[in-house]
Amino acid sequence: MENNLILNRNIKLTDYNYELPDNRIAKYPLKKRDESRLLLYKNEEIEHRKFKDLPDFISDEYQLVFNNTKVLPARIYFQKESGATIEVFLLHPVLPTTLVQEAMLVQKESTWECTVGNLKRWKDNQILKRSLKVGEKEITLQAKLIDRSKRHVQFSWEGVGIPFVDVIIAAGEVPLPPYLNRKPIQEDKETYQTIYSKEEGAVAAPTAGLHFTPEVLEGINKKGILTDEVTLHVGAGTFQPIKTENVLEHTMHNEQVVISKKSLQLLLENKKVIPVGTTSMRTLESLYWYGVKLLETTENNDFFIEKLFPYQDRNTLLPDKIQAFKAILKLMEERNLEQITGETEIFIFPGYQFKVCEALITNFHQPSSTLILLVAAFVGDNWKKIYNSALENDYRFLSYGDSSLLFRP
Image 1 (cartoon, one colour):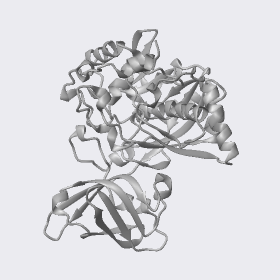
Image 2 (image 1 turned 135 degrees about the vertical axis):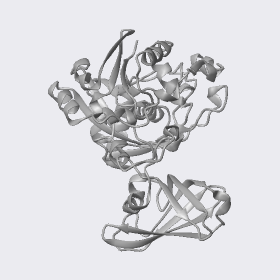
Image 3 (image 1 turned 90 degrees about the vertical axis):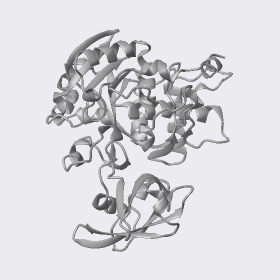
Image 4 (image 1 turned 60 degrees about the vertical axis):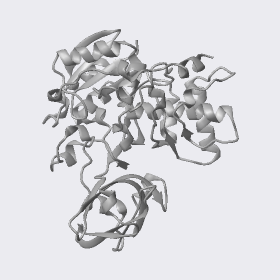
């Protein structure tokens, strides 16, 4: 019955708005990543420190979980003979595989769902071409619009042994968030990437991780704090504004997640979990709900978490996180899997009951966004106190801005 009460609420977008002056949006990163500021929120008290001090506030009873996705230069421009520019922005692979990590290795031809700028100027099945240098090889990248309604674009290229990821790196532009309102520069290729990024497939950076340096990671390791990595390939939906006054009507786009057997085994050690970023949090909380799904039914055990699945009415008590994770591990052992891949469109808003995460490292987010709703779900109404304090103390906001370490009240 409690979940019905949550879903019957009219959660108003205006309640999660705040005034963010343009000059508080960090347009460029600091030269030294860990010199960014850190707002510490613990026991409902606020402290202002530097990010390099992060290891001082975490004990070995905690485990840090990082998102190791790597940002693709997902924005590709083509010039028509008429002079018109067509912008193609990669969203999700379609053929020959929907798995991002496999799609990166495809050779010769790959079809993706995209957003397309200047779509009206691109005729169906019209081939656009662009010459590229991939390593020492000169190739021609071709793009063809094969399904206008679904925005499916087929890419093809010649050249033996050239995977799609190398083609994208040669052709694409760093997909900076639209609110930065500037063109990317050469330095963004490095600065808009975490130092631990590995798995190509994101179209936006998991920005909470941008503050980490080898020195901060060394400080964490010296304290004996467990660390682990999961993968959530951040989609463009992370920047999609909420356009409905009742936020429950907002469409959440699904994002692909990959979790290893080793990660599940570490989670079963039952440390207190701190996700680095909202993407890691969505991954971990989705993982719990996948365990619930396995325990609830044997009919459909696909790893797909719908946006409101956590809020459904249930006649039985929910399992704890250990029971949920053991259910997933059992499935992996039965299928002899070393990792499991799924999709999540989980929507975390006030009223959500966190099952895995005890604290959160995150940046300061846009007003009236899904991410500010997530923060409000985690710390309650004190999100206003936290954000007011950050504004009053000249913190830098959004992707290239400062950071926070938030403990659950």
